[in-house]
Amino acid sequence: MPHTVEWKVRLYLFEEEGTTKARVVLDTGTTELTGHGAAHRNPADADVPEIGDELAAGRAMHDLGRQLVDFAERDIEGEDAPATGRSARPETGWPLPDQTQGG
Image (cartoon, rainbow, N blue to C red; front, side, top):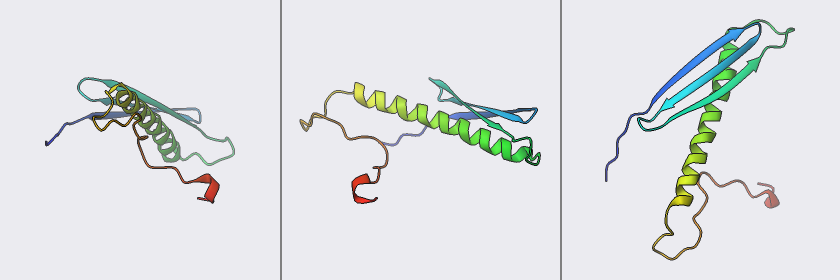
């Protein structure tokens, strides 16, 4: 069954005295989530605002992404057990490398 939706994302950046803060807002039409991120410039580093923007924005989007995955995992846990009789659902996302095998 086809499924098409549009989610709106707004990204706000604020810089003051070597600190850049970012706030990213996701509006799904039914839910609004906000991610936050910050970047602090070392006083010895050159003042390149774009770097602070990139770091703060990336961190805010990472925060937002973590929240989305958390919501999805809670939704999965809230679903009834599958009809196949399996008692546990698989984890969401990409599998992690096996640490015991040097992966």
